[in-house]
Amino acid sequence: MYNSMTMTRTPLRRSPARSRRFRITLTDLLWALIGLMLTIGGTLLRASIAGVPWNSPSVPLHFLGVSYQIGAVLLIGCLGGKNAAVMSQIAYLALGLAGFPVFSQGGGFQYLSAPSFGYLLGFVPGAWICGFLAFRTPPRLESLAFSGLCGLITIHTVGILYLILGSLLQWIKLEGSLWQAFLTYSINLLPGQLAVTCAIAVLAFVLRRIMFY
Image (cartoon, rainbow, N blue to C red; front, side):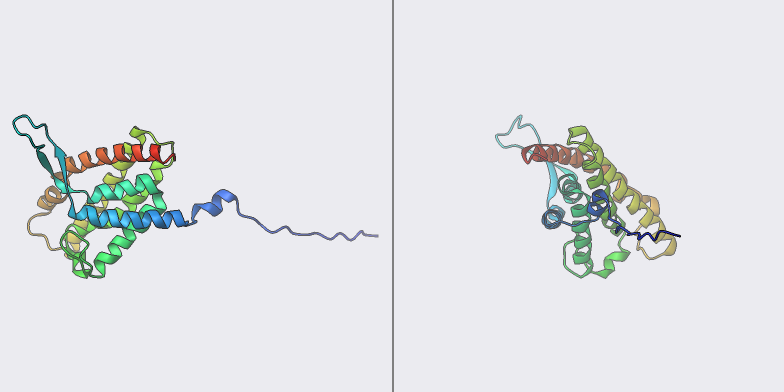
């Protein structure tokens, strides 16, 4: 004689860590909006450093040859995290491709054939990398600088790959050789962008200490 046994199946539950991984919060949306505004404003603002007024009563400013655009991308990654940073840059690209003049030379779908568009496209993975690394450890100046550096390298990697593929498939309009494009959009801009990245790391460190997170 067999004993009948009723077996109940408990529903599977996702672990809290897994359920939080892809959750978008109101804080993420607010940081994404701030990042979008910073990126648009940083596109229009030239990066400069203050000199020592040896022979002048006013403080001289030295232009670094770049804008604060990439600095804004990295800053929102260091402050808002990877989700907010990615959303802000997707929104920025969407606005520019829709025709709003938020890029340095306007906007519209014709920007897809511009040599610099690959670097704009690199803002999305670059912002994610920076935001991901910035919150892996408690905020320290060296870790935030490393996060920004990795984000900057990612942006240039995507931009260079876009230049190579675009020149091979001939959808990019290059005014000179491919090497000249590398010099114009990567090599010549790196010193100024590295200086901006260091400044962003210091600013992000101070702000995260003030906001206690």
